[in-house]
Image 1 (tube, rainbow, N blue to C red):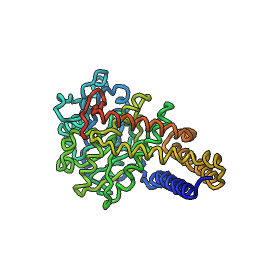
Image 2: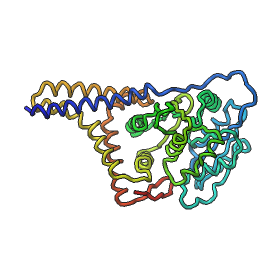
Image 3: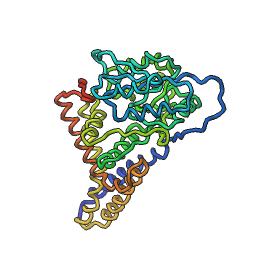
Image 4: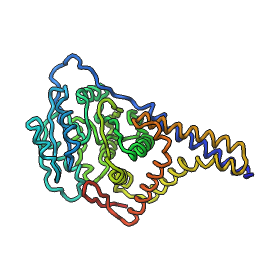
Length: 380
């Protein structure tokens, strides 16, 4: 038999794991949902909305994104795509939809700038709308998305309104890993708390966010975060620090995106997010301990209880199995993956352990962040 203090520590750990696992479901339930709205009675001339898309080698996904924009029921829309040095057919995709879609060539990337930030800044300066809608090149919209988002942001008095699209998952690794990724983002940023004006929580989704041009200009826009890969979070934090109002909503019927096409692309994309450019070995080690301690170790309580012959540990361990696997099944289904893939959540945790360990090693070696064929230096 194990000493009583060891049993006590194990039981406390089990409670902590259960509470943390439940946090993701609670935050998901708190997350407001934004659905396409039916057209209302026009109330004067609608403000001009300028859509800015940064596109680099996006010939496969960009057509559906642009066609979705061209089908919008919002009457005063300007669409600009900043072509950022593509070597595929991206230019042809844009030009085929001229003149309703305007192509701008991104100037050579200046020192100290991240490519996407430079393209977005270039596009914003080339447009005339009162509102700026920054959209990723792989986000497909419902015809009412622009109008609905604008109306919602006006009702909320939001200086920055962001929508989280439904993530389309087709391949095995997407279905295993991305529900865990969504859960991680939800809990790390406490996403629904963004909508609390007195909260210090700040985040935005760079795939789809709307801002008044005047606010964007006053706070420096993408120029103020020119060197940061996670520019959306950095911009949201600047807005929060300036006392501006942030709003976020889940919009599964508003927008759909397929983030990654294969395991390699997903690994590099998520590694970029985990690694960032502000490297901290302590943060990454804490992340590793959290992954192992909160998601893997609780699964060892049942076999431990059976081995040492402890009915208490065995019972608590069995309950943990039902609770943890059940929670991941529910979460996977809620974000659009087949429910059965939730049973593979330990594999997703393993994927993230390798991801964080890779980031830790790369950081110690001062290896740069690499994305879309460009490298960005890491700071300690």
